[in-house]
Amino acid sequence: MKEDIKDEQDIKLLVDSFYAKVNEDDLLGPVFNGFANVNWEHHLPIMYSFWSSVLFGTMAYKGQPFPKHMRLPIDRQHFARWVTLFTETADELFEGEKTKELKQKANSIAQVFQMKMGLIGIIGKETVL
Image (cartoon, rainbow, N blue to C red; front, side, top):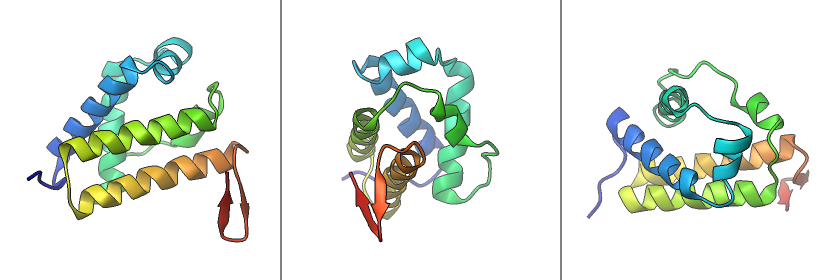
């Protein structure tokens, strides 16, 4: 039986495992490593802080993630793949309420980013894909 996400070390394991998959992914890898030319030594600690803030409320992350995504050549397919890889990684490593909460928050973040980018819309309370 897997344990739930409980601390910063678990966040680090999740983030490192997830981005290892992203780097190998045919759709996402070129965006991160080609177009965005991500400096992983710099980026990964930021992601540890971001997800720690999202899941544990640590307030360690001080940035604004959305503006950095506006310039990327991405569409709904990229977001769907990102959510799939993130969810798969979380499920491979952990299970429990915090893990479920993390997956829900990741999906919500992807939805909000897509709405802000005009990739999906809202009619009433329903997301239009």
